[in-house]
Image (cartoon, rainbow, N blue to C red):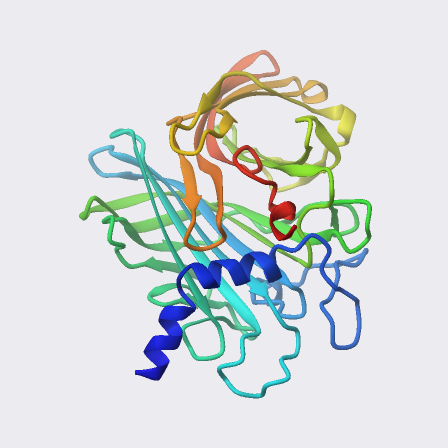
Length: 380
């Protein structure tokens, strides 16, 4: 009875409050040595498969899987399964396994592209007593009955059905090789040196398995992308949020853009933009080599958030111009029971031109800071 009581206490609003105060604070204590959180350092070189596992010396870490899948009858789905580890105490004074060092949040979003429906579910648990965790040797994540792991080169994702009738069980093959983003292995996110992270992507992972929607099982296949990021901070004062694009084009190339946004809506100087060619080679884009402009917007009746649901992306030097449009306007994730913020994350379709020829694609878009306070301001 006692353990049940503690778990109930730590899976409701009190846990969300703890998460906001400790995990999303504006200026965390972080040093590169001793008994404090590690910060992202220049000249970082990823080492695979080792870097697929957890990096517990860093305070914030996330593994985000997103993809587009279709059933044999053509019914289409988009999905995102994100595991987040948030450190609360680098070295708890209490040696008990009940001492909380890390919290784990897992979020599932599934879009029924043909039925025009979007559903979400989430889990939040503490590490230390087996409810959630991330292995440091080999790749294994778990949060209750939601899991990610690897069998040789195959990644297995499982999220058992939620109360809303969504879930998935997928097998992902490697696809393209992992691609590091940023300069010298670092994505600098702000003026302070500690506001940085290490991030890589693995696009076009062949995917097979099953998706549940409204309790109905669909055998599906398609492609997925992994984005794995670890660092120690979120936003600085004056930063409102970010816009993240993961675009898969039909010519075999991929585009990843992650821009931080200021409170006035303009693009901050801190961003990453990477064009991944069909052969897997990487081209980092400079600030003057690409343009992103919002077009149509949608206002959420639930939160009042006003989101750009259509964008134009231009890369003049590559003769690329793309219109990126939400497949469904309402793909707003209201994470009230976990991280306490509301944001937009969902499937997009792409239509444009490359070197004068029509090109199509698909992808995922995540937008934060359009509803409520900026993430960095939550601890104020």
